Image 1 (cartoon, rainbow, N blue to C red):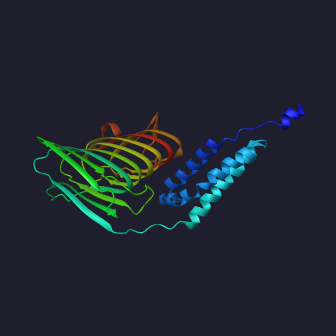
Image 2 (cartoon, helix red, strand yellow):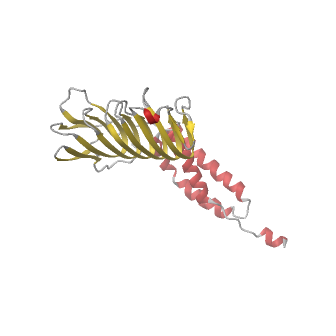
Image 3 (cartoon, helix red, strand yellow):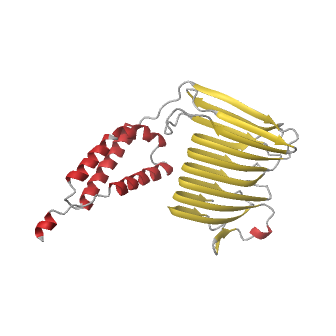
Length: 303
C-alpha cells in the first residue's frame, strides 16, 4: 500500500491556474492599476509556459497545491518584471481624418458604433450647428481608421461607424482615437459595441431615447441625458470598469446583475425597492432613465 502511495501521480491544474492569472491581470487593467499596453511587454515571457509545463511533468509526484503555488509565483513574477520594464509607446506618424453629414430634413436617427482597441469620445454639437454628425479620427502610422455608412429614408437616418482593418496589436495604446459629436436637435437611438477600449459617452445634451452599450475588456464612462423624456438603456460589460452618472433632476430606475465584481450605487438618490434601485418620483417624473445592467468581472459605479 505504501509503495502505491509513493508512486502516485498528481494532476497539476495548469489550465485553472492560467485562467486565474489572466482574470487577475484583466481585473487590474479594468481598475487602471496596470495599463492595457502591458501586454506588448508581457507576451515576451511566453517561454515561461514551456518551463511551467516541464515543472508540472517533473513534479507531478509532489503535492499539487505546492506546485500550483510555485507556478502562480512564477507567473506573477513575470507580471511584475513586465510592469517594471513597460514603457508606453509614443504616437508616430499620426494621421487625422474628418467626417460629417448635414442635418437637412432629418427628424430622427439610428446610430451604430463598432469600435475596437482605442479611445472613443461621444458628445454633442452646438445647438446652432447645421450638421447631424461631425467626427474626427486620429490614427498612428495610418492603421485602422473610421468607416462611415449613412442612409436616409424620408426623415429617418441610419448611420454606422466602424473601425477599418487594424494591423497593429490591440494593446498598442497609441493607436486609435475617435471624437464623435451628434446634433442635439432630433431624437437618437445609439448602440455601441466595443472591445479593449476606453469609452467616454457624454450624452447629457443629446436627445437619446434608447442606448445600448456592449463593452468587453475596457473602461466605460456614461453621462446620461438630462432632458430627453424617457430613455431606455442597456449596458453589458465583461471584464470592464463602468461608471454611470445620472444628471440632477432626472429620475432613475436600475435593474442590475453584477457577478464577481465591485458594485456601488448612490442609495441616497436611488434607494433599493425590491429588485430595483429607483428614484422615489420615478413614476411621475417628466425626465427619467430606465437602465438594465449586466456585468461580469469588473467594477460598476452608479452616481
